[in-house]
Image 1 (cartoon, rainbow, N blue to C red):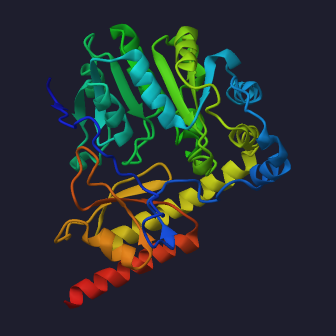
Image 2: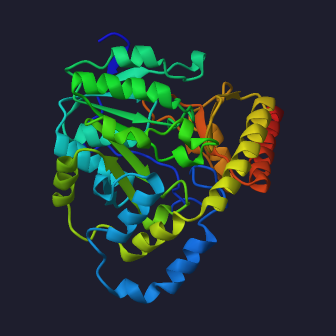
Length: 368
């Protein structure tokens, strides 16, 4: 197929992610992409207040959380399925839908490939090019979706490139998938950290598309990675019911459900985070370019950059780690190579630590 590459990724192949602070001496973790404000204070208070309830089995139906999500998104509660993080649903969807052929962006979130490869699915890629800033050509992408395409994973904003596709273009993809009978699994896990989420999210259009499944999570938006809480929104009640029946009944813990309900009331927290991210993106992009890196424009809370001078694989990663600073090495993303790194946008004092560390490393390198 024109413009595509077929994956040779084998089943069971390990996938590296950021955030491995358990096996690294890390003081500043820039490999993750969570809200820089950390977990909301209101969520922390709720967890402390409800700690006695943790002795109980959790509600397998997540009724209170689904009701809160229904009010937050203005969609019926029976269109929502809660999960143990968005990754839980990625694997469940692949096992349930059993696609034979799937289409992905390259580079894109590696977990899609892992889930599809484990099921024996053939994967095709639409390659994003550094020469165009890794921006998706929506018309070209839609052309690659055919009746033979069983499933499309699409991350908006895309990880690791940081580019967000406007709502009207996402609707073009949804309409194309509806026409070809293709499932569109739309990952909007970063969407609420955008400056204007309504201009990008298609949650309000869910009822229009029977082949659309939207992935969401509290992980990035509310810095709740350790609690593992995600959810899906879909108009197909039969699919939601099948997914629900296909898992163990207590997969979303009591503290996760309590934290989710509390987090949905944190509007001021989100607005503050968006302001911090806008300032931090501008600063980090400017400073990384000043240091000589190739920096790709981002709309969200992380930035992809390329070290043109990297003389050996993982040099910058290892040099930063010696200083207690963890970067996200992106060489395991399909379509990227050694020299590509992703860093999160943090509070300004943290951002300055990153730039100062990189300055020191580059200065020492030039002396040799």
